[in-house]
Length: 243
Image (spheres, rainbow, N blue to C red):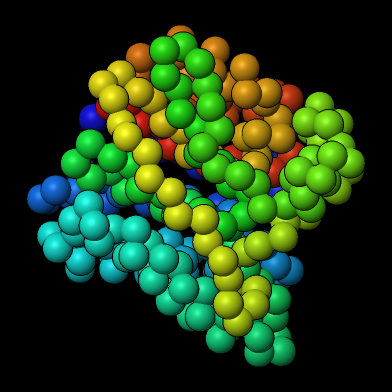
C-alpha cells in the first residue's frame, strides 16, 4: 500500500478548515485515513474538523490491535457517535463555536477490506480497471433532489445550493452515519477528498490525473493544483491510496 496526502486552503478562503490524518496499523489493520471539512463562523469550522480528526486518530491508535473484520463496523458507528457528542457539547454553547460542525470520512483498511464511515459531502472514490466510482453518497440538499427525480445529475453539479449539507458531525445531538464495507483488490486506487476538489473538477478529470501519476503524493498535488487553477473556491484536501 502506498499513499499520498495533501491539503491546501485554496485561492479564496483565508484559512484552511479541512483537517486530515493517517494512522498506520500494527496488526490486521493496514492503515486508517480520516478527512474532515469543518463549517461555522469565526474559524469555528477549523476547530470542529481538528477536534474530530484528532479524537478519532487517538481512538484508532488505542484500539486498532483489537480490530477484527467483525468489530470494525461497530467501532466506526460508535466512534462517530462519540465524536458527534463531543463537538455538539461545544457547538451548542452561545459564543464563537455556536453551530459549528464538520463532514467526516473514516477509511479503515483491514485484511482485504475497506471499512468506511461517512457523514456529509466529502467523498470516497474507487478506481478499478480504469473506471472511477463514487463509493459514498453525498448527504446534501441537491443529492435529495436528484434522488426524488427533481434534478438530473448534470443539473446538480451546477446547482447554486449544492453546498447545503443535510448531515454533519456536531451540529445536532445525534447524527446518522453511513457505514459500508468493500472488498479491496490489487491495483485498486482509492481517493478521499473534500468538496473543494469535487466542486472544481469532474470525476473524469479526477480519474485522468490520478491514473496518470504513479506517485500518489504527486497525484494529490496535481489534483489540488488543477482545482486552484479552476478557481480554488474552497479548501481542498485529497488522500490517494494505491493498493
